Image (cartoon, rainbow, N blue to C red; front, side, top):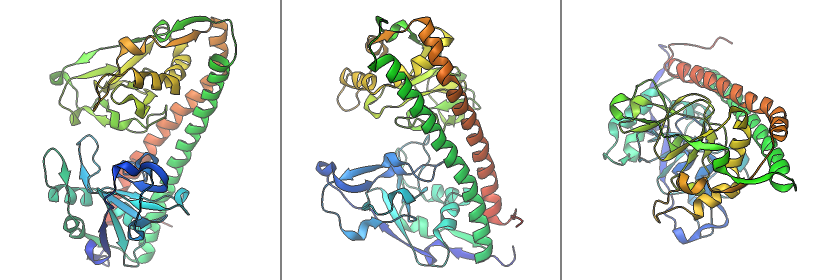
Length: 390
């Protein structure tokens, strides 16, 4: 590591603040406006952070595939994204994409490729530096100086390419498994709609309460175990039955609900975000999440896609109380009308989709293992403690 040079980040990049947009233009036009929602502490880029914008946008705020943006503020310690990077994906190539408020655009002015800089900005040393420079208590913020003042040991070009190539190879495997899960989800959802929603049948009429219950197993803050896996709304992706991320009990300090493996988690705060998934493990969750359990284990697959329907989410949204922070509740949600299939149809559906759901669970375990490998090796590779043999 003796040949690695000490470099200040401000020597290789410059920073531009995001575009101050007008809310009236959100959801219109064809320009994509990026917000903090595109940044994750565990993913390269989140599509949910991009919204259409119909107002005028100066070209100086444009970003392209391969560019890096970072979050300038953080509203919750459960979602540690302050200073974290997101890389604009190839899927947005050719589209007009603008950096919005609360994001910084990094302008690379060196021969250190963004492929390496991205991982540098994910390293523990960088995150610790950002945390030490942050301001504010409820909402943490950083300035450009905080980012530019970070110093790091920089290897030569060949070593940088080896390090980034190795880390990106892990990331591609993770991405492939996520995409496979979405395909499996779509196939199972299509089958559910064909058999239980769109086709005429002789199934008896009923409601969601006929197939599932709401479990409220409260866990006091004083009884929380630090190693318990914790699910907050921030961990559940929109329109995705597969849970990609989670936190730990050590990160929370208020009362929570307990859930079991294969319970269904339904986000009741701002239900229009469509945050519905199944739990691949047992743990604790936010009280802003409904813990839903099928009345029989063989009803799991049917219940999962019944609650995942767009119509159910829309029903929850329209019947929710509150304006600024609308919430649904079980007393309302349970009354949504559905067709109740006979046992033969349930068994037939289980036979058709159970292998897909098991594969999704298996993929989630593989993803967790790959993420652990990546996150364990990242600081060692970036510091030179471990080197990749090629």
